[in-house]
Structure formats: structure tokens, C-alpha cells
Length: 459
Ligand code: F0G
Image (cartoon, protein in one colour):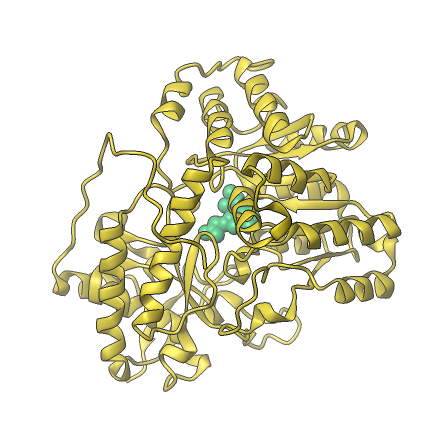
């Protein structure tokens, strides 16, 4: 749907060499790692599609701005430059810096969320949900039903289902709901966008019940690009105008700057309400540091400030999202089952459809990740049955409807040749898919178990 032939409006000034280990070494490496790609050393990986978080390439302007980093313990000039950039791009007059997105979540939830509360949203990201649960509350996902149908086209699969949201509010009562959260784009649903209309309607409903509305804004610029391309009212608006409109409906946001500020580390809370700011600051000091650096160095704050202004470039976003769309189109043409349409930061391969002979309890997408590594040196990540974990009450494995392999594309890092290599590798794997076998745990880690668990092949 998005034009996938946008030429990047940048050129390469510095490169990092990579190596493709011979096949026997890749087999040895994955064996050593217990068939879990998280345990690979990055030097063993040829193309790294584990995450788009903190893995992007900064621009020369970002690197240059870092030299202006002011490392004063309090009142750093870099903090004020960051504050100005957030105000300019997102319209928030107040910010609390944090070292990354989950730290911003922690500060917010520590103050606002108590035992027995519920936080409805489109679909919370893992760390967001984990922080909510850590406070003794629960997160409730109200994403539109089309999001759960991999083969159906819908322009805004990240939208919240307003009827479902209202029924959650009615059931639990507004006193139990400290805020409603929209994740833009919706990572756990494949990086799918949320429309302005949906944001407006959610705001209206939130106001009706007097509940604040927040964004998890990690990929806000990618979301804005989809709005420009798919929501008629905004086709002639600049990305900057769309971003301003999006944020005008929310009271606050948490931000992982590791995504759409195109930096390697950083985050913040953006907000309007002085009273809330005053409540958050003591916790921010306790967990992150003085409120004019909060877990970031002065130079990090400079890079974030510059990145926020860069990311709302339409040329940049066209190339970024175009690259993801290109990869998706090529895979689709090769008959490889993917989630359609692709989102902004990744292509999701449908593991159950790729490997229909492997039952879901044998982790098809995890098996696919290990085989893709052996085939090609590419590291993808399972977003499926292993990640879903066990139900804390029953101890039973959660069986998510979708069992996926995420090919996550770092920003400004790989070329079209890399995308073609990924496609060719997956085609080869698809041709021999019947030989791929399921997996079982040889060690099941506790907590977020996909980081540390080990698997053996079921012969
Ligand atoms: N919210 C969203 C939507 C995210 O995708 C992430 C991280 C976070 C919050 C947490 O931010 O990592 O800076 O603490 N997502 C990464 C990923 C890890 O690979 O999707 P963080």
C-alpha cells in the first residue's frame, strides 16, 4: 500500500563491517545457545533483526550535537534543549527524562497505579504490562478485532475497539482506571497504526468518564506517516502537523527514545499538568536521577533533541516505512505467510502458517528463528508462544492466537540488498519447511522467559 520505492535521502559516511560465519559455525553457535537466538554474540550474527530499539544509525547532526552535551548535575543546557524539542514536536511543556521507555513507565505507574486498578489500552507492550502488573493492577487489551486476522487488510489495525473500551470502563468504574493508554504504533500487533479519528473518539470517551488519556509514543512518527497515507483528511498535512494533532488529544506520554528519536539510549515522560509533574518528580529522582538529566547524560539528551526533529521528515519516513513495505511485498510475492499490511518497524512472519506440521506447543516461530539463523546468519525474534509465558493463576502455557517471527528493521542501518538477502534466505527455508522440527524446553526460564530459556529439537 505504501510506496516502497522511496530512495533514502541520506548517504553513508561510516560503516561497521559484519561477517557471515560458515554454516557449520552457525550450527555450533545456535547449539551452544540452546536454540535461543538471544544468547548469540552479535559478532555471530550477519543481519540483526532482533529489535529496532536502540539499534538505529544516528545522523552526523546527532553525533555533532553530542559535542554540545552539558554534563552539569543540575540545570544542564542539554536538558533545556531537549525540553524545547519535545515542546516543539509533541507540544508538551513539561518533561521528565529517563534512561529508556520502561523507566518512564515505572515512574508513571509507581505514582498513578495501585492494586486492583485496570489500565485499558489498544495492546500494551510487554514492559508496559509488566509494570502495570508489578503494581498489582491489570492491563486490558481492547484492540480492534481485525488486528487478530493476519490475512485481512485494515488500514488501522492498531485502533482501539471503543465498544470494548467502554464496556471495560463500565465494568470496573472510572475510580479503578487511572489512565487509558494508546500505544502508537501498536508494537505487539505488528507495529500497526492508530488513526486520528480513533484517537479523537477515544479522547471523547475518556473525557466523558473523566479518565486521562496517555500515549506510549515510542513510534509516534511512523504512526503519523501512516495517517498521512491512509486517512484522507490528512493527506495534505505535513508530518509535523499530524504529530501535533495526535498529541493534542492526550494528557501525557511515555517515550522510548530508542525508537523514533533514532538514538541508542534514552526516554522521557512528556506532560502538561504541573500537579502530576510535581508528584512524579520525587519518584523520578529516586529511580533515575535529578530531573534535569534523569538517567541520561547531557550528550544523550542532545542526540534525542536532534533526533526528534529529524524523525518527522517525510522523506526519511517514506524510505523507512518503504523499506519495511518492500520486504513485506517481496515475501508476500514469494508466498511466505506474513501479517498484512506490514506495520512500520517490522515484518511479522506467521509461524503457524509457515510450519503447519509443528503444533503450537512446539514453538513453531521459535523453531523458525533458529532455522533462519542456521540458513543465513539472520537473527529474528519470536513473538509467540514462548514469549507469551504461563498464566500466573493456572500455571498453564498461554496459547496466543498468533505465533509470529518478527523481522525487525533498525532505522537507517541496512540496504535494499540486505532485504533481498532476507527474502532469498526465507525462500530457501520455505522450500525445505517440511524438514523443520518442533522444539521443547530443556530449560524454562522464569519471568520474561524468551530471553534465557533453552530448547532442544524434537526428533
Ligand atoms: N513501548 C513500546 C511500544 C516498545 O516497543 C518498547 C520497547 C517499550 C515501550 C519499552 O522501551 O525498551 O526503551 O525500555 N520495545 C523494544 C522492542 C524492546 O524490541 O520492541 P525501552
